Length: 250
Image (tube, rainbow, N blue to C red; front, side, top):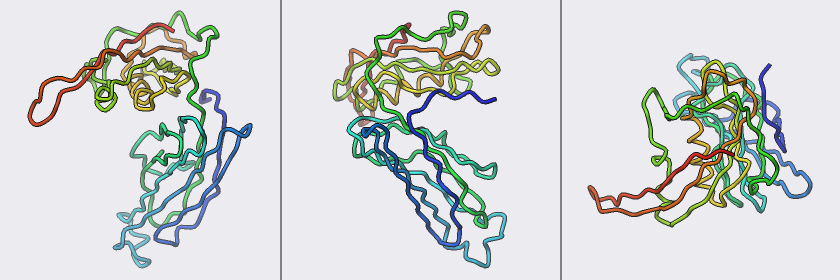
């Protein structure tokens, strides 16, 4: 049984035919009059994949889920296709500012296949709650951060644009430790810094966590603090920027 963290909204779109070179269908949802967003499926089939070549195994169509945030607050949206034939090219998570449209998921499918059903879940990026933290006290995160088998530094996750603007803040991220691969999964921002770039960076940082051996797969919460942004000297026609990134207990 797959564990999912609670969501505030869910959109399940119906399948559509694949006869057009590009097809779009939309859905709208509101929750308590505040959560308001729109999801669209865009399908693009290459010009050389005409009707006579649709059955060619090498002929594929690009599918993209776009989400527009029509709410007054920032959103985190998670998207997925309900199809074993869809080839994912990203993980399907988007952080979206009010009035902004962003790609939530992109991949490909055989040109001869119909559009699969898809799901989009969105929730507000609220300020951190004052209630007690959720934490598995037997689950410890190792000191190192690692991506693709290589050690990385937390400071490398400070977004350059945020450092240039002097943006600082603390993000609270909740996730499930996967006991099998000792990685964080199903991460969601439950406390916003007030800056969408910092929220997105904190989410990305959780993917570098290496969890301890005693993790039981229960929800764990962590704080990521971005502070002391700096701008350095010009290096190879670019200005080095960065800042301090700390991983704190809830």
